[in-house]
Amino acid sequence: MKIFDSHFHIIDQKFPLIPNQGFEPDYFNCQDYLHSVNSLEIIGGAIISGSFQGFDQLYLENALQTLGDLFVGVTQLPYNTPDDELFRLNNLGVRALRFNVNRGGSEDISHIDYFSRRVYELVNWHTELYIHSNALAEISPIITKLPAVSIDHLGLSKSGFPMLLSLVEKGIRVKATGFGRIDFDPSEAIRKIHSVNPDALMFGTDLPSTRAKRPFQFSDIDLIFNTLSEEQASKVLFKNALNWYRKSS
Image 1 (cartoon, rainbow, N blue to C red):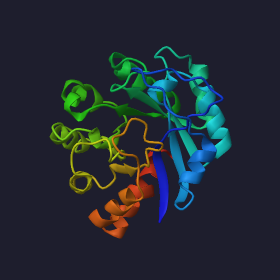
Image 2 (cartoon, one colour):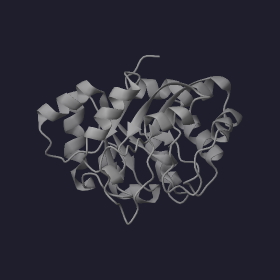
Image 3 (cartoon, rainbow, N blue to C red):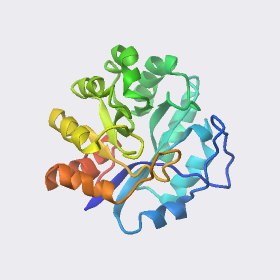
């Protein structure tokens, strides 16, 4: 089946990295990514800026040029980024702004209301959050009023899952990614989220799975097929993300 890989990282040795919490990842360039997913029917994907890349746009521009028009970028930027730079990045294929609450390396979450609205109004970008779901209650009054928001890795935490589910009811989208990062059964979470909003879930490989307890496995895709019907799985694997990132199939 077709897959739009809604979440993976490119870590190219040609561009500088910023050690994060004492961690510096191994390299994983575009060729490494394509080799890793060679047996999958990848029809596009989203390159996600990591904490170790900070506000660097050069690596992302290079990756988008290398992988081509089927792929989009999700970047980290300071809140006072000039309009012209936002337009430039949008023309290069960037489609979302990321706040990495969990690891840092992005703009501070205190700017999410202003900055998320600004990028949405200027270039129609949505906002992506890497955050433990047990920390969502504090910001839920803000993010539920934003135009478009998604949350990474099923929210990571079992204790915060009820809050995540309540946000799905209010239109928040969720990445079905990083099954090796979470502390609960992904199949149960996928079933519950899909039942609340069939358009909410978007699969991604999370390659190269930096700092995950276990890396992505092809069995993660099988889990989705074993949890949902074929038509439901097609929404999770590619249809929802194509709509979210404004790409045609």
